[in-house]
Length: 110
Length: 114
Image (tube, rainbow over all chains, first blue to last red; front, side, top):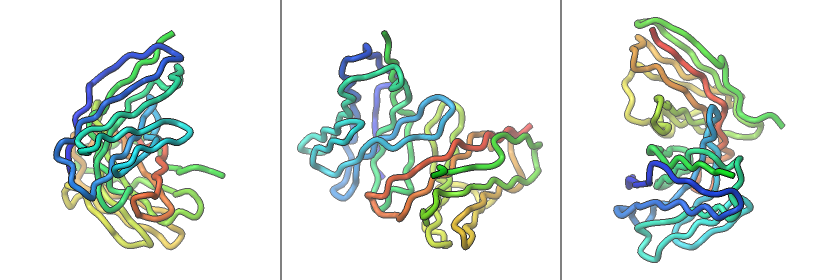
């Protein structure tokens, strides 16, 4: 599976959009991009996933570049409860065998 | 409806001992995956079981084993514990195993090996 590169930490003001980048330059054609987050002391929580089209759900939007070498997770109106470690994962075939990197620690502040 | 449950929540063992961790998936979910999360790192995939058969194994030694029961609950066993096995062990369940099957994680079992 392709590896991903994320900034180790980011800050965002409450109410503003949080844009979390992810590079996956070695992604192959059949690999999906998954985003999970982990709030302190809890298990990871699924956010969104996509193959090549942009995706949106009630939690976030996922923007994948046309060459699929990078993506951005957008939390449109960040709240304090969005403070967490966000993981970008690339994988094939099944959503049940994911290997997480070290993620981005997002701190939402007042 | 209850989420994924794991037991015990915390466990302390000594080197060389054996440990069994348990996971109950969400009702109706047939896939269970196990992950190891060392402090400061992201979760690492250990095993996936679907319909009681092993469907995937991560890069872990043979000291790690698992099984899934007819009711889809699962056990993770680790033999000959090492200090490096100290970690949060996470269980995740999903209805199926395709790319669109969202995984739901349990709260984890914190294992400390002394």
